[in-house]
Length: 209
Image 1 (cartoon, rainbow, N blue to C red):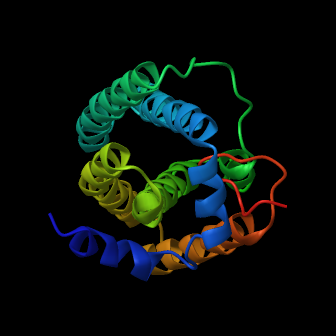
Image 2 (tube, rainbow, N blue to C red):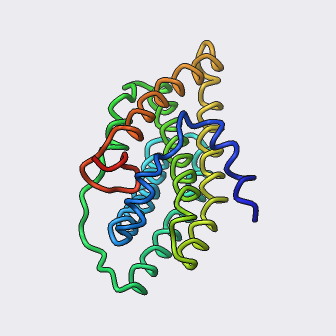
């Protein structure tokens, strides 16, 4: 598999690359990285399931989110296995500011609310894919192989969310402008979160303070 093939659309979409200072800090604290990675996979499944419950009238969304839930839970199981192999307890870990900060900008009424949720989903999946790639040169061979294997699915999840957002926007007066405006807004927020130093290491945190 050529990681660059799947990564290029991600790099074209995201406003910035992950700071190398974050990658070095993450590689130096694999227990925290892996525990938070497991948490991220679990939350991704929960988010997709929540959309299934909230929008039962949308068959295409239901089908895509159902598939995504299964894949995210499979990834969760795989990370749990890695933790067990490395004798790292799956201990409680506080969430990063990343997702909550993005969700604060979601509008309150549909279809605007759903569009925003889907755009944020695309951004989170894109950043996860980019982070997997950024970490490859900093990891041991087994973990490198695992993270490289996740690139394809994360890139596909990014496309799934973005396409669903575009389809949902067809119910707005100016679909193309709606997607462009909201995506730009959320990517501006995301860039600040990725580049601003953080006091704690998390999978989506900024560089170490």
